[in-house]
Length: 168
Image 1: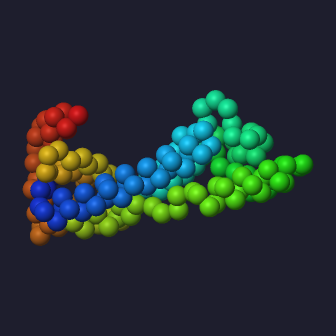
Image 2: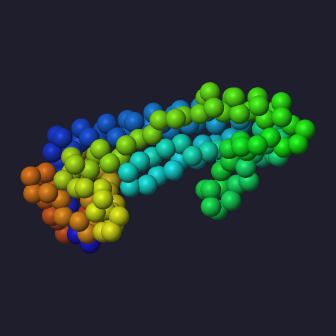
Image 3: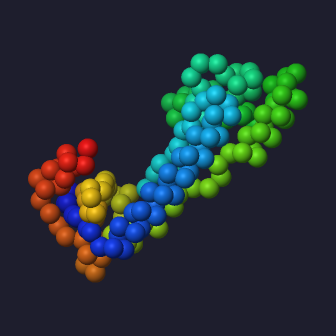
């Protein structure tokens, strides 16, 4: 793994845009989950962040039988079942309408950020990647090499780790 830092105006503007979109999505998800007395669950990957479902802590909204079962495979979250349980079609229809009309449907396109730091998201699947921002500098740990014209500077791991400690 190699370490880089970049502090170009383009990279910082792209970071800010990505963070603002992420904050807006998380706010929408939180407001939506409150309708059901739950917490939002988001799905993150190399290319995007999106709303995934809700997680109940305590009482389940209306009836537990209307919801998918939270498991390790679905991030311990739930959403309305696709088919109504026997004898609960009216409740299921009402729940599904509430869910579909209010659920956050947009996502944050993280892949739009990578060109600003000189990386292509496709290679990051194979090389590994992590990043954080401290002040006006974005620090990157990856096996990929940013494009020379992006303005990224290779640094030592000690500088990366020191900035990471300061950022926390």
